[in-house]
Amino acid sequence: MGSRRGAAPALAMKREAYTAAKTVSPVLHAYFVSHREAALRCGEQRLAPEPDVETIEAMVDAAFWASLRREEGYATRVSLALLAPEEAHEPILFERRLPLDPGALTRVAPAVERPGIHLGIWRHDGELCVWGATRGIPFLCFVVEVVAPGLLVVKHHNGERMRKFINVAVLEGDQIKLVDERASERPDSPQLLRSLLHFDSQASGRQSLITLVRLAISMREHGRGGTLLIVPVDTDSWRESIMQPMPYAISPPFGQLAGPDGESAAAAIASIGGLTAVDGATVLNSRYELLGFGTKIVRQQGSPRVERVLLSEPTHGSTAALVHPDQLGGTRHLSAAQFVQDQRDAVALVASQDGRFTVFEWSPTEATVHAHRMEMLLL
Image 1 (cartoon, rainbow, N blue to C red):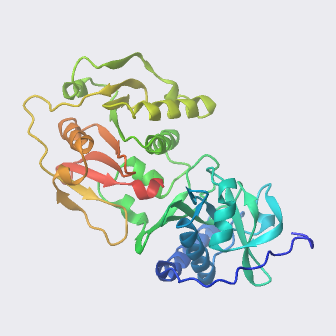
Image 2 (cartoon, rainbow, N blue to C red):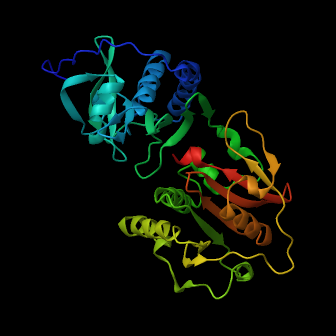
Image 3 (tube, helix red, strand yellow):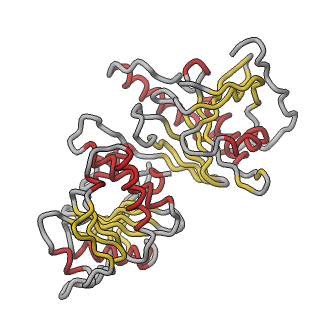
């Protein structure tokens, strides 16, 4: 850091401890120890430092109390990453380090609230400090992100530049949700779930999985709610569950999303994510070609109404339960469940205005529609 970079005076103000931080820190420590050992066995070299229990607790505690503060009327949004300055890629270094204090975090947050920017946290003279900001962090770097007041996500970098971070836990007030990595091993787990939990860069269909994740994120970003249907490319039977004519049918199908990743694909993802804000469903085929948007889902002639769905969430301690579709949300969820019951080779993704995100697929093992709640993996 250099001899001129001294630490700013710490604030002599005591605050109540965030109980959830103390509860979750040993569990998170065990997670990062285990994954670090696995990464070393696989030959990974550029690994972030292992976070100790005390550091995890301190970072989560500071992030939580900062999340409840406002700066000029704006809620705090900030991401904290544990790494030394020399481990960051092209960091911005503060001449005077800041204390890891909610007030200090709130004041600097507007400068670093854009996605992909992290405040760097490291110990200096025995105290955790904010040394600057960076976009480049190593694999398995411990990150705490303030998403909304009282809502935190613990995550880490997965080692790939274009990939979403891997979420480990979500803390909302006194509620702790730990991601169950083995949820992808459950019968009939969807591709999106497998991709968000752990990504195999050598897996077949790698690019399509990245596209699906980025589409899901884009759907949530506009905050209006929306439905995305992915239908088989080799049949038109899905049209029997769509009111005809489609108001905004696309002909010929728009295929930019199916091309190689790059700026054009990123623009296509943003555009199609925006289309889901229009009332009705957006339809893609399994080649990710856009077929239409603003379409109304109808019950297929002769098909029974959907009366139950299997609801699950990829968290430790949760169990799947059969529920009525009304318990999932509004008409978007009900119509998506009906569509998948009638068109069992299709997939429906539903984003709610409140941020919930559900993937509907037909479960052959349970012979019913399976609703996978996934918003905690997309934060």
